[in-house]
Image (cartoon, rainbow, N blue to C red):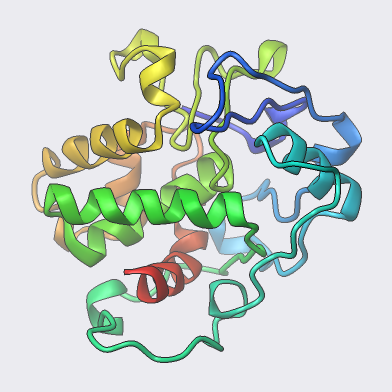
Length: 238
């Protein structure tokens, strides 16, 4: 699993809808500006509200297979700010179901572009299919926010943590699947949720404990900082 987000540099993003062999190195300066790379335990992490600068967004657009170098706008709604500006939907998940134990420590937030939003949707759809429900979806989205900032990453070369790839930074050498499989959002999400379902009483565990049991990260408390934004994402996209 990804041990430290700063080790992304330079990064390679993968687009599941394009040639899986297509890779584009992002510049060190561009990726370094992707907002909110938490470097400290959640208890002392400062909330993140800023997004990547224009150059970094353009690089991500290119790396994820978008046409042109003009970045698409981030999704400045409740997915980022915590206060929904979207029209309320019937059947919206209850906040108590999404965050039953309350958040732990300072919370971080980042703006989302369309690539990140689509990856979040993919995780949520698999949460429904695997039966882990809204709470499982929050754990999955929060984990992907920490591991990859919701970008479907290919191999990162010398900056890779071993052979970790994809939304959840899963490792082929640890039995998660082939590189092609773990960089498929549906496969990666299914693998994550199947592992989560094998954690006894996961529904009653704090998010960071449930995520860490699956991910076995060197920084287990980093997952907790994304719980609130993950809940907002699930509430709006469920």
